[in-house]
Amino acid sequence: MANLSPRSWLSVGLTGVLAMGLLTASTWSADARQEPIDLGEGLGVAVMAGLAVNNEELTRITGDVAVSPGGVVTGFPPGVVLGRIYRGNGQAARIRGDVESAYHEAQGRAANGVIPAQLGGRTLGPGVYESRSGAFVLDGTLKLDAKGDPDAVFIFKADTTLNTAEVSNIDVLNGAQEENIFWAVANTASLGTLSTFRGNILARNGVVVDEGVQMVGRAVSLDTSVSIAGTGATPRTLISVPDRPPTSTTLTSAPNPSRLREPVTFTAVVDGEVNGVHAGGEVIFKDGGTVIGSALLDDHGVARFTTDELTRGVHQMSAVYLDEGSAVNEAWVYFQPSQSPAIEHQVLNRR
Image (tube, rainbow, N blue to C red):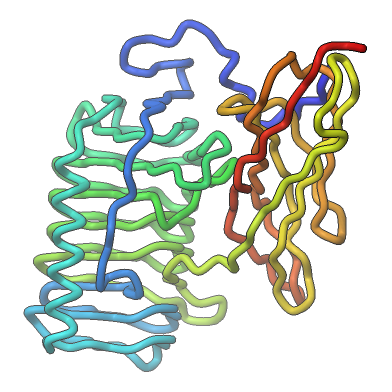
């Protein structure tokens, strides 16, 4: 029997899925693959506003800041911008145009799941979600599960508002990436004190980032202002564009071809490092679109999985690296998930 990880991607075995994707009281899944949304010139922007970006006290923004058609940017310093600031110029206008196009594309996607406003305590798969009430509220932890697809897209459409509570949190699982999480909000968005937020907020009206927020993504107010409350002492309020170190994954199998019921070992090599530290975490192994097992990377970026359960015929095999974070110089670094090119593995009849 193949060794399967007890991780959350095994939830595919659950039954009783309802038409709108309800699995349990706390788990929903639209499970509909979406094409990515292109931010164009907005890719390097961490904060963008139509009229003004206003900051108070200690904040660090990693990425560019843009304002268009307005041009007001205040509070830097004491806030720090590790990027460029564009105030009402041609580049700011181009950024605004591309980000607004992304907003309209996200709002125009057909919903795969209509869910309650409260997101806390839920696990969601890829797809497009809209709220029954027109608003989204996050109190607690929301888990976004890519189910082994590094390109999985999550879109949340709110007709009115998005509000997160104090110390609320978003976790990304099994290959989910902040770059592919979009919050298209027709009115305002507010992130509560000390909350952790992941994804791109594309709001028509004001965005408020409260004290001590840790945000990986982008804060965008297309028509009005972004207001950021920094901290009185370190650690600062943080807003950072998604910038994970890249990885690449390759896969081999041996013996190939193999015989029916003969053990086959699949070896995945993940290439990616920061300051001499290799990417760490888990690799899942797929037969076509079906996960058949998993293994942890060793210190050299190698994961091996052995099975004797492949059926006769030609199998399209692939490996997917799922980052769980690695300690680099006393900091926690999240690497970019990656999927290997498919290889053909042939299983012959027994001798």
